[in-house]
Amino acid sequence: MYPLTGAIIAVKPKHFQILGIVLSTMFAFFIVFLYATEPRSLEELTRKASSTVGDALTKGQVIAGTYEVDPAKFAQGLALFNAGDYPGARSSFEAADPEKRDAATQFYIAYSFYRQGWGRFSNDDELFKKGIEAAKKAQTLDGGFVSKDQGLKLKTPAALATELEEGVRITADDFNPMRALEERK
Amino acid sequence: MEQLESEIVDSEIVLDSDDAISTPRSGALAPAAIERRRALLYYLVLPLTLLLVTLLGGIRFSSGSIVYIRPALIYLIFAAGLMILFFVANLVRFDGWISERFDITKNLINAITLFALFAASVQVFNSVIPESGIPFWIVSFCFLWTLWNNLFSNFDTKRLLRSLAAMFSLAFVVKYVVLANLARPAEQGWVDAIINNPAQTAATWLLDIPQFSAATGYLQFFTIAIFVIALWFFPNSTEE
Image (tube, rainbow over the protein chains, first blue to last red):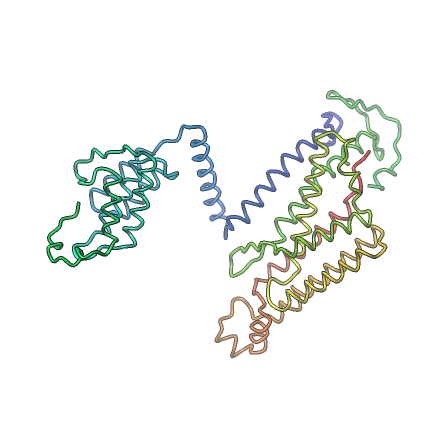
C-alpha cells in the first residue's frame, strides 16, 4: 500500500498542491542559494549555508530590535587591542558587531586603524582612511559617544576622525623635525 | 496519462474523505486513485523534476571542484521562444494551467510548474551551448535559426517533442563529444600539451574551448534526458 496514493489515508489533490508549493519553493531557494554562493565542495556548501543562516538570524534580530553586540567577542577584541594586536582586535570587534550597529565597537575599530597606521615619521594613509570611515560610522551611530577608556587620549569619534584626517593631509607641519618627538595618542 | 485513463475500472467502494474506505481489485483503478496519481505527477513530480533540471543544467566539473555556470541572457530569449513554441504546438494550453476556474492553490502550483519549465529550458540551453568563443556563437545562431523557423511551422505535440529531442541531442554531441575531443585535457599542463598534443592545444586556444572533466558530459546527458522525459509527461492542461 502506497502511503501517498493508498486509499486508507485519503490524500486529496489539494494536499499534493500544497506540498508541491512548499517543496518547489524550498528547492527553488536552494538552487538560487547554490548559484549565488557557488560552493566548490560539500564542505564549502555546509560552511556557506551556516554563514547564510547566521546572517539571516542577525538580520532578523536587527528587524526585531533584539540585536546586541557579542560581549565575549568584544572583551576578546579589547584584550587584543590593549596588547597591541590591532588586526586581531579588529577581527574580534567585527565578529562582535557584524551589523556595524554599535558606536563603541566601531570607535575601537577606528582607533585600531589609527594606532596601527601611526608612525613617528609618516603614517599609513590606507589604514588612516579606513579609520576615518569607521570613526564617522561611530559618530553617525551615536553622536554623543564619549569613551571611558583611560588608555585612550582621543575620547570621541569626532576627535579621532579629525586626528586621522590631519594624518592623511600633507601640510607644512609634516616637515617639522619636532614632529618626531610627538607621541601616539 | 492516456494509458492511465484507458484502464478498465471495475466496481469498487471509494469514499473520498479523510476516513475513506476502499476495496480496490487487482488491475483496476478507481477514478479517485487515478486522480491522486495524476495529482502526484502534476503537482509534485513535474515541478520538482523540472527544478532538478534547472539545478543540474549549469553544473560543470573542473579539476575536482564544482563550477556553477550562470545562464547567459540569450538563453532566456531562447527559452522564451521555446515556451511560445510549446503554446503554439499545444504542448501547453495556457488556460488549462492558469484559469479563474481553478482555486488559488492550483493556480499557484501551476504557475510554479510553468516557471520551472521556463527555468529548466533556460538551463538546458545553458547545458548544450558551448560557454564561450566561436562555438558559442555558431551553436547559438543554429538554435536561433531553428527556433525562429519552428515558430512558423505547423507542429503537433509529438513532432515538436521529436524535433526538440533531436535538436538537443545534436547540440549535446557537438559540445560534449566533438568539441570536448578537440579540447586539451583539463589536467594537462601547457608545456606538456604543446609538446604532446599541439593540434588539440591550438584548437583549444583558437576556439576558446573551456576545459571540463569528463563527468560533466555524463551529468549533462542525464539532465537532457530528464528534461525530455519531463516534457513527454507534461500535460497540455490540468483540468479534470
